[in-house]
Image (cartoon, rainbow, N blue to C red; front, side, top):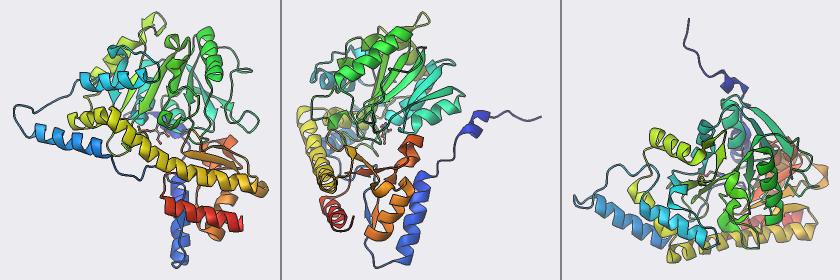
Length: 393
Ligand code: PLP
């Protein structure tokens, strides 16, 4: 007799992607100490928090030191001032949200995983390749997962045409990690119509919405019909450099009903039971990041990263290498040249050009033969890597 454990964990594929990369890079550096390796695989921000955010955090720290302004537990769904800041942010691109539809969280990864709590044993529909958390969190609860192929033919933006019509939990990430591809409003409308027609739910990850500069929707709720079929998960991690500060939000519209149950109060109950709120200091930082001045500063940082993306995109254009992303997203997803496989190209870039990127095969089967470069490095390092590619590739 023994305690039963969650056997579903045995079904997880060992995720060797980043440890394999680290092993190969460490071995190369040890064998070639004189060579300068440039990392263009970074999925984390590198610029520090902005001035307005830091000032707000310092002020909040001082408040915590004074009995009259000290705060204990934060409200589970967020302070009113943070919720208001998120509502204003959405209003700036034309999406009106009620205050009780916004749930402040400690980031998108947690909520991408936590959201499975409010659903039963549904089938899941996930694009391949994609951010691995959607897949793994559903494997952990034993769900049946259906993959929908993203590939060069569909611009790495799979559409519902051809998907068997039944109810699914559908995961959509736009702009996408790893491919950098972004859905247009018309394309998202097809997914929204599919979801409403089949009684499905879309979990929409908009973690990279702040990188959109062209005419793409910043939120699924900019698409007509989404309020009856979608939940949106977003984060300040990439918008404001909060990867180590931790704040995001989840939007559950009041109209969202499945199996005669309103999902908004259900998510509220879930959060109130299992989550004790984001720290006051962090919520003040988040409010500051979304203020007019704070957001302008965040956009300066994003513009810095996007100059890197442009440098990378330009050299790929020169070389005639196919890619997506890099315009409305910090990620560039390219086809490995000369028919190389993802890992083959990884080895080539590391050994010949001393550049580290991320093999597309690590994000799903359809990623084989593709490769992810990111723009989160410095201008200097990116420019040097780009020069190496220009000369040698
Ligand atoms: N969603 C996507 C698509 C991501 O790429 C990431 C981080 O890389 C996250 C969510 C996680 O964001 P957070 O730092 O808010 O947990």
